[in-house]
Image (cartoon, rainbow, N blue to C red; front, side):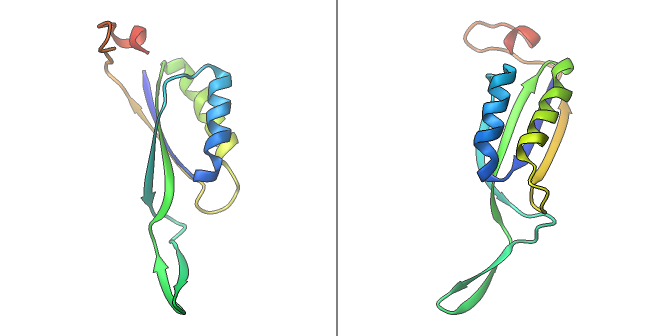
Length: 112
């Protein structure tokens, strides 16, 4: 099993969700986060004074899938989240050693 964490632009969430759903992914955790990277933030003005904001709103997706689905899921996220501009986000992949569905006690792949 693989855990895929993707940090994307909020405006790209609906497209990514729809594409993942069409692929058959039903389990996803979505969190509103703030962060910075190469984008380095932006400058806004408050009462005429410039204020540099380096933490920008992002969306974090967490998905655990069977290992053989991971590359397809990553490709779907990239295709639907990419704008080609700095700040599109990042994807992190981790190995998952186990999972348990609390309601039924099913384990590992059966719990997905």
